Image (cartoon, rainbow, N blue to C red; front, side, top):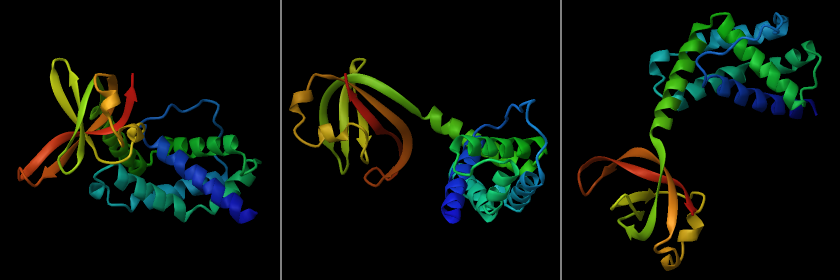
Amino acid sequence: MYFNSLKHSYNLMKKLLLLLTFAATITLSKAQTAPGPAEKAITDSICNCLAKADIKAIANKQDATTVITNCFGKYSGLLMTVAEEKHIDPTDQVAMRQVGIDIGKNLFKQGCDAFTQISLKMASDKINEEANMGSTTGVFKRIDNKGFNYIIISSEGSERSYLWLKQFPGSEKFMGPTIKYAGKKIKITWHEMEVYVPAAKGYYKVKEITAVDIL
């Protein structure tokens, strides 16, 4: 039971800390009390661990996530002590969520430079990722096979193609005959990515489908 509670709390807290790093700044609640010994110990430990990381080697959100996860995992045993210190049940997700928020606030409040720098990298990467996302509405024309399937739609007077690289919400509708969708209005949600096209011997930006809705 103790191990399961610890594992549950660790997974929850890890996710919360990673979510906190997406925001480069956090509004510190005036109601937040001074951290107790256990809370301060885990905050200091995580900060010290992050300070040993090679910040320059962190190139994207995935790299940053790995660093945060590894550092937090080293001190997961302190979570139960923090929960005991705060007089909360470690299986109480709401209460443990607040613990995660408090630790994130502590890291920023105490001026943990490594945490701030990693957070900025994650936030920047997330912004860039979101900037390359979008959706297009048009009339379904056909599916072209060029090594991979491309869904072709007519939008704003021209044909546009979208790469079907992997499963996405709505993909099952296009796995069989698609004649019934000809002329129907659909919405394609996509994200832009750069791929190497062997036939063209170069890199090109394509829009990979992440979802399709029949309107």
